[in-house]
Image (cartoon, rainbow, N blue to C red; front, side, top):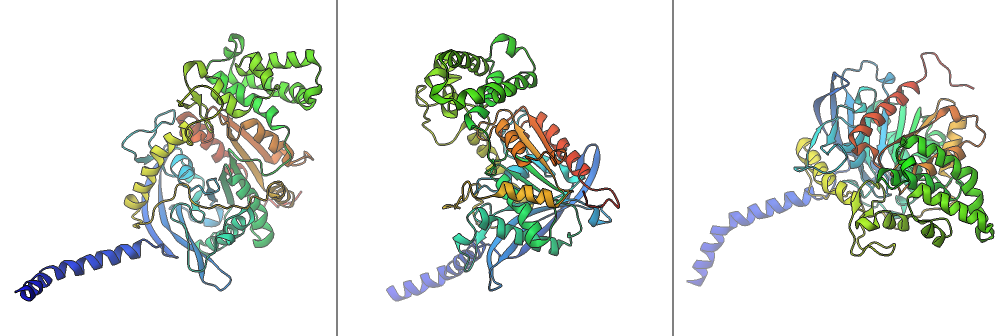
Length: 501
């Protein structure tokens, strides 16, 4: 009886067991990334009143090891305008986010692509989290490739790929240069005007790439765009001094400045504070504890005026208030602290005292993660049909990361590339309310990029009334994309124009 029952049950459930095995097998295959694959679709978007048809390719392209086998696969999204007869006249831009370890979703669904995350006008998440057409995309003037470095997005190590070959300042630059070289060959884009766009840490990335591509691959760029970029290890002035105009901008936004300053236009106020910071505040701070007492009191009074903080608070911090202390102090009486990469955002903490924070995620990052993560997963998997069980790593495991601090030389790489290529131009874009990488520090870094002053006509700086990701604010998205569009168009040499000094 038991044997017959067992046989009957086996016959009954065996088809379901087979189905389960098949389903498991299918999912096992999909949980690994194919080294080389493409999925192509088409769409249209209206930019500046003109309907533009484009092709979008999502896929993976290998990074090859010394043995010729794929050591990694990089996931990318490539937007290409359809109605282009001569591709050699069509600019192509490679876009990266920062971190290191950040995927490309921020620039992809926030800034330049034909699709954009739906946000409020000031950059706050709206449910349900979806994408809409981006009428401010730069697809009208350039094709765009959004690249996820290894262990970000869907990009992964494969086979014999080793972490130490990919994670680090120059490891990152080296393999990405190889990958771009291969991409240009596959897509037949060698003759196109070429651009790099990098946000935050990717200032270091694209600065290094400008030299690597030029020196080792013969790829001369037309433009490099640095969005809210880190300093590329250039010798900037005292960081505490460079924070002052940033503090002023944030205090102005939150209505904490004296009435006479508060009533002025922000740019007029900042012009005054920037001059004071370099001409008077810097020499005073450099004297340290040997500053004359009367001068110390005068500086504290002026810094208090420009920051909205109490004079005693300035003196308690020896004239230079750390960012953490400022973020906790400015709105302490209201019970809020300030965001880091965008100080327009407010958060609440376990206690209002001190200069430490209970949570590890700043309020603006929580808001952005809340909206961008479900949107990129839905868009890539459902709209663009990239089916996989892999997790899309918004912030991926890339550490330990050899920083080569103070010796990485990426700023020098960019300077040398500009010196050797008279047609290479650089655009810096920054947000007034970014306290992670404040705008005045970035401006000072640009000054130090060209000590000779002979290339300053090829260095451009734009600032917006928002934070690190200035494009999440609707008004600044319009302005920043127009600035980017103008930069690309004016940096393409005229027909027959030689690259010469």
